[in-house]
Length: 204
Length: 204
Image 1: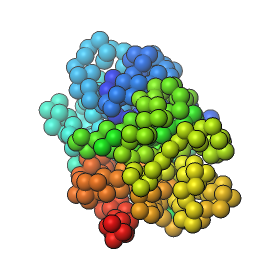
Image 2: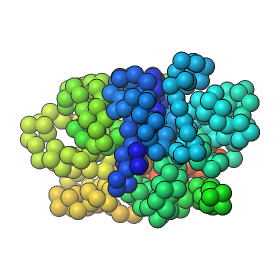
Image 3: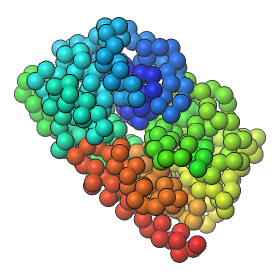
Image 4: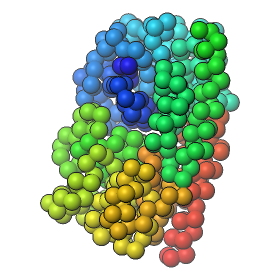
């Protein structure tokens, strides 16, 4: 399982690194920081080397679109959008916070409500997408959105549960959860993603 | 407020980036990825430019020691340890997961129990430090330890609460918390750090 974690100029470090770190805990899985440029600067000025180019998406089994300070611009940049080729029929695809704007611009959220963060919500709604405010995670088939940077573990858990089962998702969450609170932490995360696993199974 | 987030070769991305991202949300605060080398490779092969050298610690108001695959080696490297100069009388100092090994090697945990992750616990105990298993966060005065990567927000919240008050810590946590679960998320984090704020105030 190869995962492209799309990471753009002025990216949010939590989104890209929490999800890639957790996904890399699954034996045989490799998640890569995937950039439109060879060097990527975070919202706080950290310079990072992209591990893969955007074109890696074509061979990836899953794609995560992280958020950042410029995601709104990216969602209006036809040249960059043309390089983002998603195939939700084959790939698991998830967007975090303002990443939903990119998913929307690419036409993948037609008629589907999305999760996003409180700051991006007005922009998502302006784009004609219903923004859910009562939950941090929603999925429709192979397409998921999450809201609030610290909901990144939900994206990782959903991808793992979809491909390897809930027990493996629980194992990975437990390995990173706050000590002393791990069982409750894992249970909360699983409760957030479980409704969308059942639906995916029903649809299959 | 200037914060050095110590980030070593083969570092855990969650530890260094969650805490720096959250601390940078406080107006006037700057948290920097601080490395022993100019380029740092994460445990998953991501190459990052250090924003500051280790010597930045001398002027930092707070220091976070992140964890990683080589923290155990670092804690046995006298040359590297000699470059890590902490002053808990003046600085807020926190270690995440295996970062506790570095704090211990520097003599800062004498007689103090520490929080660490489940994998580091045997090493921490071998170093003669009591490892707490019932909680993710503990502080003694200006010295804190946290266990489980996803407890990184507790370190950020504690530093913010200590210097700017609980309300600012709550505001920052809320800005990143999972949508829909934010009030409960913030309340859980504050409950974890609050006992150590009272003790710090008592001691002051």
